[in-house]
Amino acid sequence: MKVTVVGAGNVGATCADVLAYREIANEVVLVDIKEGFAEGKALDIWQKSPINLYDTRTVGVTNDYSKTADSDVVVITSGLPRKPGMTRDDLISTNAGIVQSVTENIVKHSPNAIIIVVSNPLDVMTYAAHITSKLPRTRVMGMAGILDTARYRAFLAEALNVSPKDIQAVLMGGHGDTMVPLPRYTTVGGIPVTELIEEDKLNAIVDRTKNGGGELVKLMGTSAWYAPGSAAAQMVEAIVRDQRRVFPVCVKLEGEYGIDGVYLGVPVILGKNGIEKIIELQLNDEEKQLLETSRGHVKEVMDALDNINAAKA
Ligand code: LMR
Image (cartoon, rainbow, N blue to C red):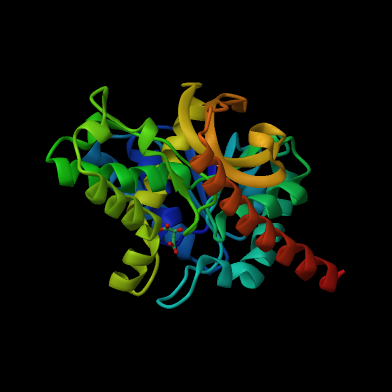
């Protein structure tokens, strides 16, 4: 299996590293526009192979998409990360052009690839990649739900003093402050989380999760990379190993949850064909309302992208 990661910055390089040391692909191609940058990162990852004992070939290229030809999966991490004080949506005008041009190059050389978008604003960049690629919606998706649930699970594990491995959770909606964590569907070793933690503590964790990316931007002056890169690699693994894992993934909704034409995180089954199935939960009124708020927000940013593209045309 051949996997390309576009963008050799912190997130892309972390993703490539996880793909390599966990031997998720035979070959990982790392692409960047900065001369020599991807080559250097790929070489560094390759030089780690005798220490960490893996044989995934890692290759770096500067903007040469011919080297990405016939990739099975492509992860797009290109674009700017945010700085303190910015929202993810502030990145739209810069990152949309980048994601659209990367997608054109990818599809030209790997027409059968499955595309995973990581660039922000995530849901709208997934939209940008999908309309540019003209691929079926099952083959163009966004990574955010695994990251957001990982943050939620990590915070819960800390609060309950249990292993994060035993916390199962699902989260829906856009990758932003309007995301919808679902405590009703959160369990700890099979026990509903609401039986183990007081409501106010759980609410505080939900709020912290919603602002999880921003918390890290504030601390580091730039966006996170270990968890986002690992989350993208986990999606690649589910696809290349046809694991049929159940993850929250950003996809174009076409009537599911009563929503049409908006890109939102929902639980799906992820396997060799990409999104094998969208799972429709029976949401209660409060959850439906939160999802509707998130839908409205993402749609506004999608409309902003349409206006940017129309002004360019
Ligand atoms: C994250 O959640 O870590 C990413 O979306 C990056 C960011 O700017 O928050």
